[in-house]
Length: 172
Image (cartoon, rainbow, N blue to C red; front, side):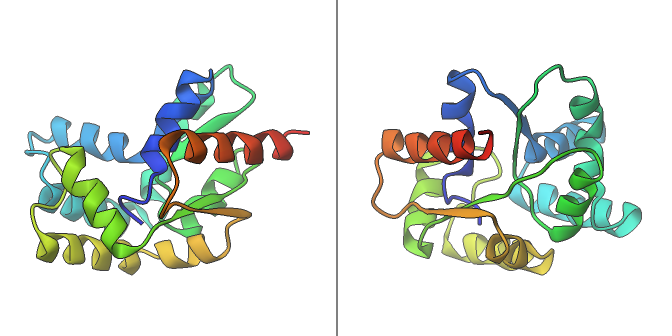
């Protein structure tokens, strides 16, 4: 779910040499191409429009060129939202899913402090975003993940080190 710590892990993994592809950035890039302001509302509507027009795996399809052009053996995809995206990515290569869980209060606190243009301004916007994410199937992807990390009381270093350990076990 938004604010659980996915991007924090991705940033930490990038600093350790992993290649990161952020699915939300592909939606933000599409918004820029369309001259849309990157607000939470606009990006949410665009994400839904892309899925309606191109199917439930539409956002994963946007990152395929980045995957195809990569020389890396391991690519971290930040921001998977549905099983259809997972199935699309599995058609390209080997996929493991790491879900990050945090309580509603923890996630709202993280997002309130992050300061990105699409972060919710208030609890109502936060709840709307959660509903939108649940509507595209994120809860099933979380439930069926290969591994999960609970990020309610971890330091950033603990969170990143836990993710690194899991990934290293997957690649053995």
